[in-house]
Length: 140
Length: 414
Ligand SMILES: Cc1ncc(COP(=O)(O)O)c(C=O)c1O
Image 1 (cartoon, chains in turn blue, red):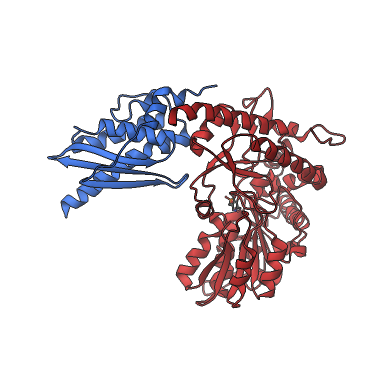
Image 2 (cartoon, helix red, strand yellow):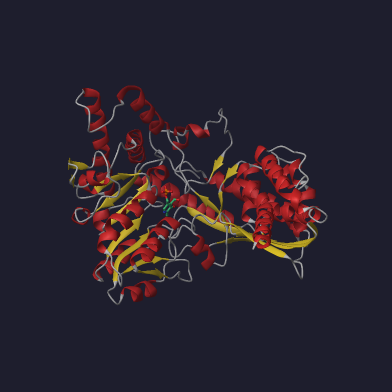
């Protein structure tokens, strides 16, 4: 019987208090229609680099832990590098392997069962949405 | 506690998924509301049909096609008896309840509803009985009315009555048993009331047909839909019962082969119901499996099934009541087959995963009934739903696993 998915590390991440940014350059919100979970992600950006990340999650432990890890990982990353990282993380989660992905590397220590992958991916989807709204805005 | 079923072992033994020597040994299955497991009788009927009786129906002149057609049509007669329909012409094979409801919206709604008319649903519906009417509303300018949720988790009868009062409601469509809570609606009374107000009535019987006998003539409804997979039958097949006089006024849903009388390039004439609504090659083996499922349920008999499930429900309610921090969603005056609940400090999805670690299969989420959960101020619950193979011990395992989840989360997320 494995409850390993809910390691102390993940439970601690899930319990971590996170906060919205007071003046984000971009905000994205994603819902999971299966359970009504919701992730809000704020980014502050300067010269193509994420300078600060904040947000909030109304969700399960996996979703909250996913957001906490993401908020840790994002500052200092170039916007340019993010789409590829998201894709790598998405694939590793889908394959249930621990991988080299930078984003969500902590979560990937444990394979996430298929019905729960959406929970972990929700913060990443918010990031993707933030990136695409950024690029739309830049092109306008 | 176990009711004795004379002359045979407990029906759980009929379901190979529970084989103690098989790959799912120790499984506690409490998700029959999403889909029920299949007895050997159904699995073998489908397999035997493919192995020895298979051919397309209604088309061949050879023996095999004739016997396949007889078997397929035989199930139609069997379903008519199962629902006590007046005639087998009133039984339409569809893909499932979802398709049945969409068929009503399309084939009846498109021709019989016009701007200014209203359709009445309740707050307790599955998305399948909400969205088709919303689309019709947007296409035709009809009004979609929703009878409110009562405080006790049932339907608000006064609101239901009030929403029928102006005579604009042309169709009242509601669930027999709410899939997200287990609330049993007083369908006979609601039907009588809606009919008296001049509306037709459709009932979504998905969560009812596996738990109690249904008599569409006694109910007086015009439509009744269900999916075979919740009745221990195969996926991919469902039933739309329609009163013949109503079906005769309806347009086809899909068109093509099997549903036409004559086709010329300038004009096509359609067959009478039920063939008018069954375009193309149907899920023949699914129909055969549904027949076997109805036979199987019949072999146990409603008195045993109902008594067994009533005892299970009482046991489950007592066990869950003893778990601190567990809140059961109310199910009105009568509950059937389903417990929907939340547990303080543990998100339903996390709970679902931990229960799975304990080999307890339940459903977590919004159960395709987001509006109903919103009424309760929730976005998700855990739902345990039972079938005739469940035993009281299943609820003990459920409660034990819930407690384990609480131990895991309470100190850390406090
Ligand atoms: C009350 C109710 N209505 C409709 C449906 C839809 O059934 P299906 O998905 O088999 O078409 C379900 C099944 O989840 C249900 O429980």
